[in-house]
Image (cartoon, rainbow, N blue to C red; front, side):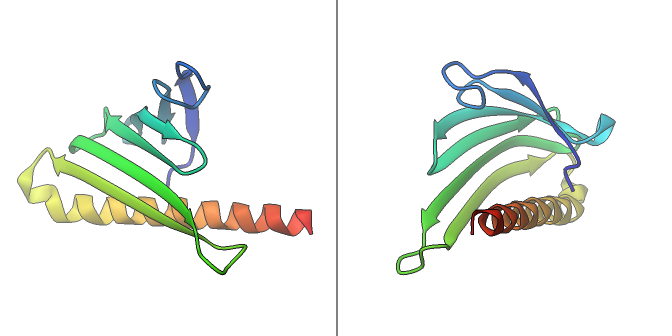
Amino acid sequence: MVPSSRLLQAGDEHRYGVGAVRKLGVGPLGASERITEWNPPRSYRYVLFDAPGIKDHDGHVELKAVQGEDDLTSVTWTIRYRTALPLMSRPTKQLVERAVGSIVDGLAAEAERRMGSER
């Protein structure tokens, strides 16, 4: 769903850390993301801006090891936002859910690929 990501500005202390700005997506369908908290490898928080139809987007991603499962990680992704037009709430929610699902699926596939190459 997010076909590309391009770093526009490096973070203050870490390339992708606090202050980093990335352009996500393609053309007018894209958005920009600024990292506001960076706690690798546990969590990060970001704000999305220049996102068509979305205002006040605040996201938080948290990773936790699943107890008793050496190779499992729980991902909690919390997003709060407002739509620019009230009548667009449902379609915007569906779009955001599909985008997040697609990103998580892609991350899981990449993790599986990397784990397979380490075995």
